[in-house]
Image 1 (cartoon, rainbow, N blue to C red):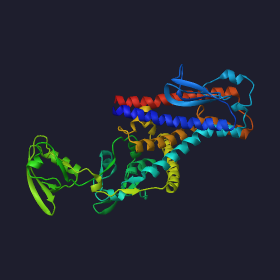
Image 2: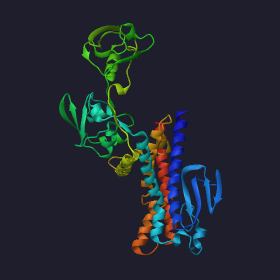
Image 3: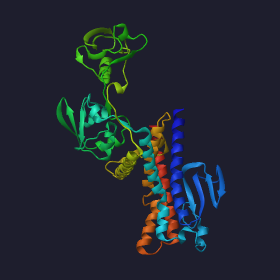
Image 4: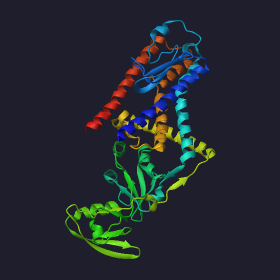
Length: 441
């Protein structure tokens, strides 16, 4: 069921992005009185799920969810309609329009995707506001690094001060900043003293391909409940007790305590707790599993104060613009890493399985729209790349025409379109092949 929910979210998001993108081309074409023959959500080789005609345009939905298209008269596109191009140009055709109008038509989809992200951010901020856990709050107890973070030099309890001298307020964005800004050093407070972690060579590649949580928060272990036949409860522990130590070793954090208690299977241990103002030692005889049978309180609101802000429409507009620009900047940084042979980020490139997996396993509208805004920016940037068959390829040839004052020949554009489609299919196979290989590992 969880996989089905992720697939449905992916299909809905993809549908919104495709319709908005193709509408950008459609609207620009209509403004300049250029005929649009077809407007399709998804591709329709051999047959369509449905179609209808309205004012000279065929609207429909294909069965292959790899994108969508508008077929504009007099344009060499993925339809490869060579016969139409052999006829004399007609006033309503794309090829008959001035270069500046054709440029706007080709950029219409990209522009609409950027506008969509902008509108989504404004709407989200106005409706939900903004809430996050600040790094300052996390520093009350310090971080819990995973194995990769410890290999890079982090230690349990480190308090993050800055990344290459820059403070990151939203704690959850620290791993992303380590990658996108290619951070070389992290300043922390360790054992109440300033300390600089110099990230070892090769860290960036490992971070890019890292799937688990690099840095987690730490919270004190306060008893929130007991399992059936709980050893802790039978020994006298009560809900609300704070665990301070095991056999005299000072341990107050959940993961530290869990790791330590597993070292004492079938042993008798002394657990030191704090109950209101009293400190009490409790003797426990652990079983063969080495478990006390106590659950910690997990409500983060009891330990941290989350940063919250409500936005009016007037406040949301400039913030939405900032987030859109930031999203574009971050994705351009990701593309830069993709083409770096040293980092080998291309090894982590994924297809539809990877994209689908970023959606939550339970339907959550705020997450859905945040991811849709991100994917809209991604689609805009990828489409403007100067690859034939993409919008950016057509834009490149139009700039050539404007500068050279002559059009590339139809035959050249036809071959360029074929070449571009081969590249796109190769990238599609590579990305989805990576997904399959990951599943097989």
